[in-house]
Length: 167
Image (tube, rainbow, N blue to C red; front, side):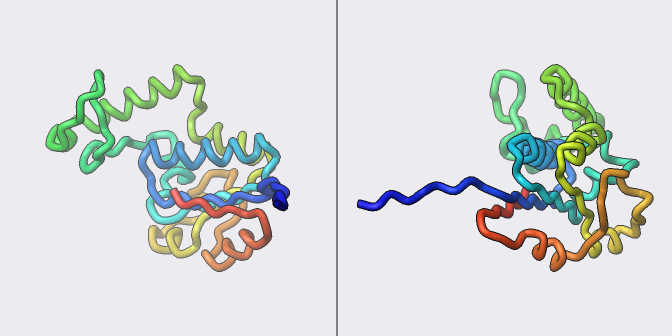
């Protein structure tokens, strides 16, 4: 029986389309992991994911407390969805999440973006979403390389041993 030679992953293209704290950080952690492994990285922010690269919002992201079936209270009990709509709950949960992330030495979003680009990763914003939300390049993190169309992003994803990840 012939054994197939395993070939390493060469390129990762990540699409971040959600702007919650946990969704943006999932994209950043995967992106940083790729550059640390020497894998070519293209990170594309679209729709509400743009909050992760918009100067006004990127370091003040919130955790979604309503409609989040995975949300748990201390001790592992399910988080009652109706509590998420009460004033101050989303802010308190988000603050707790940021504190826990800080205790794990996870950097704030702006520093994470700097680490990714310093490691060789490239960060893009979606032209359609930027236009839709009436943003300009100067509204975005300095780490954003360019504002491109999804078609241009797909061109960047060309090649064997490439993975596209949608978060």
